[in-house]
Amino acid sequence: MAAAAALKTPPTIETFGVVGAGLMASQLGLLFADKLRIPVLLSDLSSERISAAMHRIHAHLDTQERRGRIQKGEAAEIAGLIRGTTDLSGFRNCDAVIEAVFEDHAVKRSVFKQLEEYVAPDALLLTNTSSLSVTGMARGLKQPERVLGFHFFNPVAVLPLVELVRTAFSSDAAFTSACNLAQDLGKTAIPVADAPGFVVNRLLTRLFSEILAEIDKGGDPVAVDRSLESWGLPMTPLQLIGYIGPTVQRHISETLHRAYPDRFARSASLGAVAAAGLHGFFDEDGKVLPAALIPPPEPHEVDQNRIQLRLRGALAQEAQLILDGGVVASWDDIDRCMILGANFPPGGLTRLLRI
Image 1 (cartoon, rainbow, N blue to C red):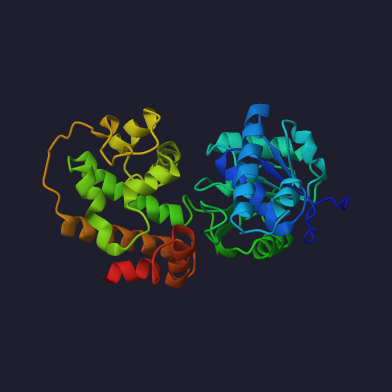
Image 2: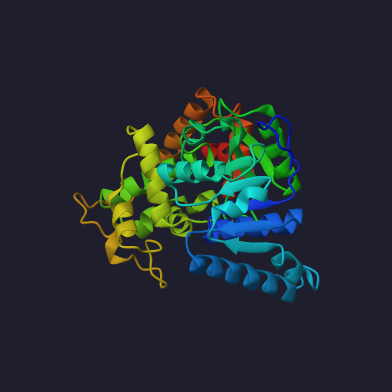
């Protein structure tokens, strides 16, 4: 690796680091090893979390090989590229590092400050944050120009979008390197401005906010959740919250509430489900879990047509505000983000607003 004073030319990425060993971080480590076929280092605070991550990775690769989705012998080859550590000093030989730790700004800033003590000054630093300020993470670092947002979507191996977040500090070399990396990974990188929630999570959270407001007012959760079935979305809103994870979604919702309190309200039902440590609003039989049944102040009949009109108005407003704020340049960008990152049907948000 070059001993540059700063990242001025796109680095050749020959070793990749992932800070974190949770579900998302494990997927990222597997993606980098599979697509780039380079050594990948996972780190976490405990050896138990590292072991769990390696077990998930090995199990996934074995299943892929058994089903003929990768060639015989590839599972061992890919798995052999991935190793774990609890010591951040192990990242000193990495050409690029992505953090995928808990969605907390202070935690992520701390990770980057620690990484700067070990990685070379020309190593690329990426964050997989889903909603937080990338500029805030970069500010105060020794080389803030090499920090970018590089936001993947779950499942990482399936959804092709990467929201590429450039800050006022980011250098052309870092941006070019990240674009090249996305291409090498088989992903579509769409540049987005550093704004809370970026594009996909901002629009999804506005959708969730409106749906949860109906439930918090006393609407039957099952009926409210089914109100958008005619839109042909891959999951109902509450199913998607369960897939994302109520705790994660609550953090995203809080970020957007702080930024835009007039449009993103706190939800009592989401807060209760997250506080109870539940994985979603429903049990395995599809029945609403008790923690989601906030005593309704004004129980009312669910009018699905009215809810659809409410949602179209809210999403049209939020999309226009995204454009007015320069987060992306066009409606086409918004549609591509929602199709590639949220698995919206062909036509994206524009089609849904015209139904």
